[in-house]
Image 1: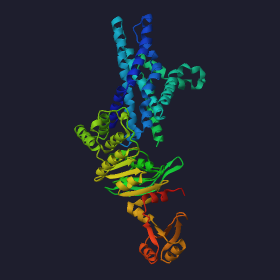
Image 2: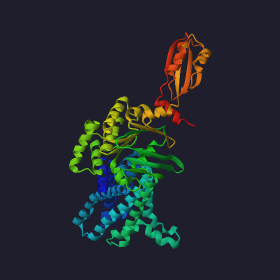
Image 3: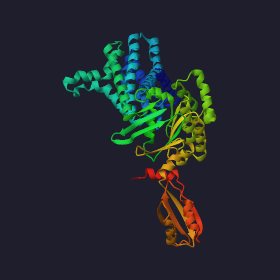
Image 4: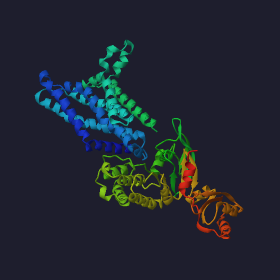
Length: 234
Length: 312
C-alpha cells in the first residue's frame, strides 16, 4: 500500500508539472461552463441538471486525454522496466496510476463548485442532486479512468490509447440511446451496460447500490484487464 | 550468491534463452558477452524479476525468483540499456522518488542522494530535467538509481553503450570502485571492456552458454593449437618445410603471403599443450637462412569470441 502512495504522488505531481493538466482543465471548464450558463437563464431553474447531463459526454473526451500517457509513455521510453525492477508489483503501479487520475479528475471538478455557489445567490438550490451529482461524477470519472488506463496499457502510442479509450467511453455513454438496434432479448443487458442512465440516477440524488455497483464493477474489470495486458508483455 | 538452473525463456515459439545454468559467487564481477540477439538482455531481465522464466529457476540467497520476487528485487540494483528514465522529471525529484519506492527513511533519503551524487558526479545537474541530459549523464543518473538501496547485486545492461571514450573510462572507474564490495553482472559486446573490468566472462550464443571462466581460462581452453609465424630470407619453402616437418607435434606447415615476397613466410601450427618454439628455432639455426620474423600468435578474446559465436 505504501508503494501505491509513492506512485500516486509521483503521477499526480506529474500532471501539474507538465502543461497537459492546465490545458485539459481549461478546455473542460470552458466547454462545461459555456453549455451550462448559455441556457441557464433561459430555463430559469435553480438546478445543475444541464451541467450534469452533459458530463458523461464531456468525460468521454476529457478522461482518456488525462489517462492516455499513464502506461503508453512508460512503455515507449522503457521506464516501466526500471519501475518494475524496484520492489513494486504491477498491481501497485496500476492502482497508483488509477488513484492519481481519479484525484486529477476530482481536482478538475473542483472549480465547477462555483456553479452551485453562484446559484445559491439567485435561487433555492436543492442540495441533494448536487451532492449526488458530484459523487456520480467522481464514480463516472473513475470508471472512465480505468477504461483509459486499460487502453493506455495495450499500446505504446498515446494517440492510439486516446482514441481507443474515447471510443469505449463514448460507446458506453451512448449505448442506451441506441437500444432500438438490439434484439429485445438482450435489451435489459445492454441497458444496464450504459453508463449514462446509471449516472443520471445518481445525479438525481438517488444513491442506489445497483448504480454504485455498476461503476465499481466497470473499474474493477477495466483495471483487471490492464493487469492482464501488462502481464502479456512479458 | 546467485544460482541459475536450466533457465529457459521462450517468446512465443522463439527460444531466446536455452537452459542456462550459472553459479555466481559473492563479490564477483561477471561479464556476459555475446553477439546481438544472443539472449543477454533477456537473461538479465529474468535475473531482475522483470521477465518470468518459461522454465528453470533462479535462486538468490535461497530465495526463488518465482515465489520471492519482491524480496529478490530488494537485493538487486538494475540499470537497463540506455537508461530509460522519465523525461519530464528533474534529476533530484527522480532520485527522491526512487528513494521512496526503495523504502528509504525520510532523514536517510537526503544523505543517500548526496552520497550518490558525489559518487556518480551528479551534483551539477540535480536541478535539470532528465530529458535534456546527454546520454552519458543519463547513464550516470541511471547508475545512481541502481545504487540507491545499496544493493548487494548490481546488474548492468551494456553500461557503456553509446558513450564517448572519456565517459566510458569514467563509468568503468565507477564500476570498478563499486565492484570491490558488490556482486556485479554486466552485459556488453565490447570485448576489451569485459577483459578490463570482469573477473569472469560468460559467453552466450543463441541462448546457450558457450564459454565460462576467467579470461585466462577461456583463452587457454580455446587455444587448441598454437600458431607460429616465421619469415625467412635466403630460403625456399620446400627446404624449410623439410627441416621443420620431423619435429613431433607439428600439425601443419603452410605458406603465408604472396609469391613475390622476397622472404618466405610460413605459418606453422602445432599442438596447444606443448611449446615447440625452441625446437623449431634449433632447426632453423643450423641453416644459413636469415630470420626476419619469428613470433607466436597470441590468442585474443576477439578470436575466441568469433570462433565461438560464428554462424555454423
